[in-house]
Image (tube, rainbow, N blue to C red; front, side, top):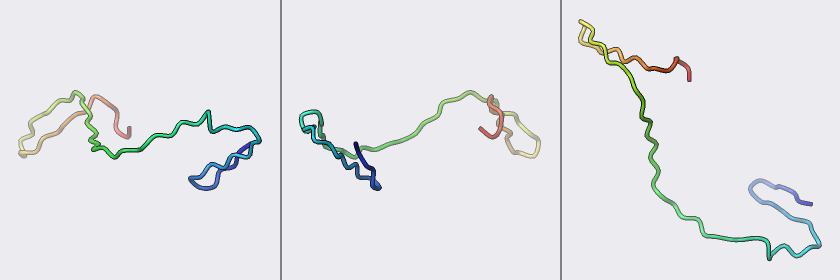
Length: 59
């Protein structure tokens, strides 16, 4: 049996579970998301560029 209180898990059990729990340290690492996709750049006379995505809008 267990209970969750926010980010805390409270375990109510007569069984010794310390042998089954593994603890490890958490490290902060830099993260950068990169999306690689294909598209088409189309020249428009007004000096703007229309970039067409191969995916439907709204995804």
